[in-house]
Amino acid sequence: MSQYHPLTTEEAIEFVKNIPGFFSQEAHLECREIGDGNLNLVFHITDSESNKSIIAKQALPYVKIVGESWPLSLDRARIEREALQQEHYICPELVPAVLAYDDELALTVMEDLSSHTIMRKGLIEGNTYPYFANHIGEFLARTLFFTSDLGMNQQDKKDLVKRFINPDLCKITEDLILDEPYRFSDNNNYGAYIEDEAEALRTDQVLHLEVALLREKFLTRTEALLHGDLHTGSIFVTTESTKVIDPEFAYYGPMGFDIGAVIANLLLNYAAQPGWTSGEKALKERRDWVLETAIQVWEQFERRFRKLWDEHVTDHMARTAGYQDLYLQKVLQDTIGFAGCKVIRRIISLSHVADIDTIADPAIKEAAERLALSIGKSLVLRNRELHSIRELGDIVRTATAAQTKGA
Image (tube, rainbow, N blue to C red; front, top):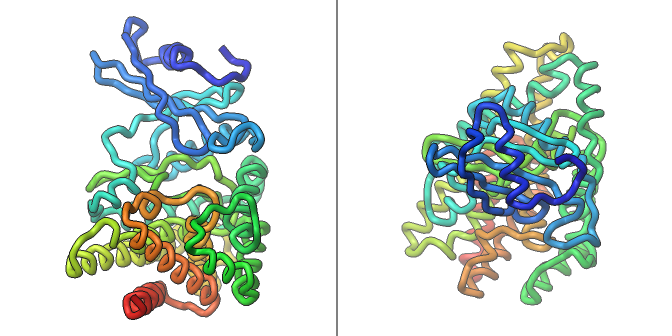
């Protein structure tokens, strides 16, 4: 079947039927194309008799939401598959298994997670996930440590850096997150009612300096293998389980980018809460939980990362007294800065978040966007001066109080 072409549902069925030991040759399979939003075809294939199911994901040679005018390399499918395999090897309980692949077809077949919910959807519905911060902290600590110069042979790491050069997907990040929100761009997408906010972003030279420094880090630092797009739409959850998917933006970059992405998406949900939670007391309780979860993501990551460092660091010089503290201070500040950039991008640039975009009341939606931008700008502006993740909580609460007072 190889030789690239977008698969039909019938061809997807034919491919998965030949995976050894999964579906029987006599199985009557059903397939539906469920999509994943912006870039790919995704097929959900089921056998109603055995109750088995599987996911087949195929990359398209362009950005799906834009069309053929925005071409993309199909090699991103190989990068995503190899990143999934790396992450599953390091964290098998937190990443779905790859069951088959065809690089020529840009196709990866993996474990189905239909028993889980996309975290963004669950958060919008008001669910809580008591183990999420622990789980994602573990994922971040292990995947970032064991793909870095701290936790693996440094020559082997250089070979991995070569394998995960990902120019097309990195260009999307460089443009949509670290450039275009701060200038006029056809890719920007926001309501005219926040044009004043967009103009402020375009003219704030102090903010631009901080974004330029963060952009330099994204362009030049090869600290660890990143997921590259770790938002709440790329995480499946239950109350007891967490699974990370979709690392097609994977590349070697600054650790804080992944951690900041998770925190940013929780903060976007925090800003959106008046659209989903009624009553002053319930709103405060919900926001407190979301904000504390965001803080705990860093704290759980840091605790586990320090333990891995103490027990497994491979670099003798990294055992020098004081180095671990300075290293993690740098990662924290990067985390805060990149979180701010990710928040701003989701309001001003292409591809927003459902947490805010699907709020029915226009006034509440606008207030959520303005609060998110206030938080995002503060995080970017202050990232180099912060020394504790708890200061993030202060920034968020201050921005919230200012909006409430001004309402």
